[in-house]
Length: 337
Ligand SMILES: NC(=O)c1ccc[n+]([C@@H]2O[C@H](COP(=O)([O-])OP(=O)(O)OC[C@H]3O[C@@H](n4cnc5c(N)ncnc54)[C@H](O)[C@@H]3O)[C@@H](O)[C@H]2O)c1
Ligand SMILES: [Zn+2]
Image (tube, rainbow, N blue to C red; front, side, top):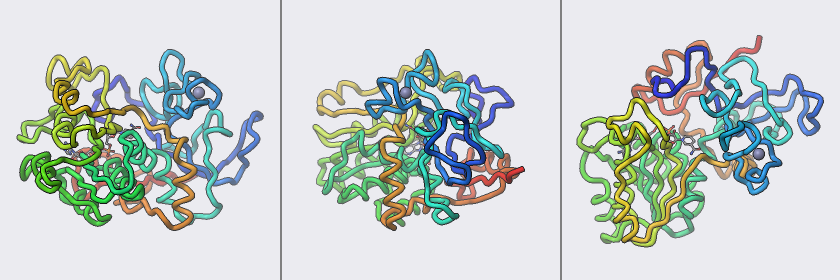
C-alpha cells in the first residue's frame, strides 16, 4: 500500500496492529469495559460465521461481504480504518478484543500479538513444525523472526534464517537461529550442506511476492517458493504466511501482474511436499501466546527496533521501506486527544 501497488488512495488510515485502552463501548458489548487494556487481532472477524466457528477467523464471511476476511486499515479488507490514529473503532468487540493485564508491563510484547507473533507462529503451524525438527525460514523481517522464534518455542532443533540484511540476520542469530545470507551463495545449497544433503524437515516463507532475486536483479516473485522447494527434504512441508496477491500492477512481468508465478510444481510433486498458506488466524493463537509472555516464556519484543511518536511515522516509513538504519519493527505511539 505504501509503495502504491494497491488500490489504496491518499487519506487511508493505516494500522492493523493495534493495542490500546478502551475509551468507550457500544450497547452490544458485554465482555470489555472502559479502562481495559486490549490488543486486537489484525483480522476483523464476527465470531459466528462458518469460518470463524472453525477457528479460521482470517476468512470471516460476515465482516467484508464478497470477500473472506477483514482487517483494519487495509484496502480490499473492508471498511475498517486503521489504528495509526488517536482512536480505533473495534467491531464485534467482545470477540475481537483480547484482554491484557492492566498497567503498562510488556507493552511491546503484547503489541506484537496483533499480527506478527501469531503470524510467525501460524507459519510454523502451517508447516506442522514439531519438536526435534529442522526448519528453514526465508525472510528475517518481523514475520520471519517471529516464525524462527516460534519454531524454537515449538522445540525445533535447528532453525536456519535466510535474508541479506545484516541487522536482521544478527537478530536471528541472537535468538539461537543460524543466519544464512542469500547474497553470499545459494541458500538451499548452503542449508543442504549443513543437513547431510537432506534438506530441512520444514520450511517457512516469510517473504512473499516481493522476494528479491539472488542475482541482485530486483524482484522475482517466485524466488522464495522455488528456493524452499529446493531446501526442504522430500515429504516435508512448507508454511507460507508470506503474502501473494491476485493482482500487482508493480510486478516485474505480465503473469505476475495477474498473480501467476512460475513455481517448480514438478519438483514440489516429486518431493511430495505439503503447502499451507494464507492470512494468519490470529485469534486461534493470541490467547496462548499472551500467556506465554505473561509467564516469562516468550519475549517477542526483541524484534522491536524503534518506539516513536505517531507524528514521526512518515520518516520511519521511508526508512522501513528501504530496510535501512536497523528499522526492523517500529512501535508508533499516538497521543490521546
Ligand atoms: N499471512 C499473514 O497473515 C501475514 C501477516 C503479516 C505479514 N504477512 C506477510 O509476511 C511477509 C513478511 O512480512 P515482514 O513484515 O516480515 O516483511 P519485511 O519486508 O520486513 O521482511 C521480508 C524480508 O525478506 C527478505 N528477503 C527478500 N528477498 C528474499 C529472498 N529471496 N530470500 C530471503 N529473504 C528475502 C527481505 O530482505 C526482508 O528482510 C510479507 O509478505 C507480509 O505481507 C503475512
Ligand atoms: Zn466470521
